[in-house]
Length: 145
Image (cartoon, rainbow, N blue to C red; front, side):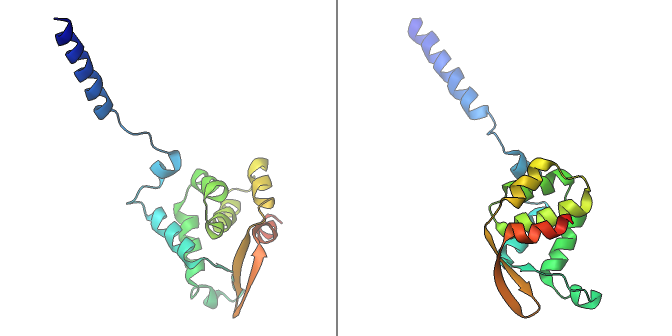
């Protein structure tokens, strides 16, 4: 009888483990694979360059990164932009997310500003035909002022 009860307990515990759902990260959950935001983020990261917006509005539409930025600005929530700007591993994604966050929300929390302004990772920037490497924080400062 004791062996039978022991087997039942083991069986019940095993079934509980297989039924339990895996824990998901808030960022992963909010950016699911069928979400268009994920495609935008992938495209921005794949390009791996920050394109300086042209002052000429007709040129702006030809820049793929700026089109992706406009989509990011339109689709992403303030919380998603905050998470992307502070937690994404790609510097280009963090930079575009911070730019969109500043455009969407005028009062940026100090902790986010501090994280971005202390980010010294280099970013490939493209201004017309010129390409250079610049610290992320030096570009991000321009979004605030």
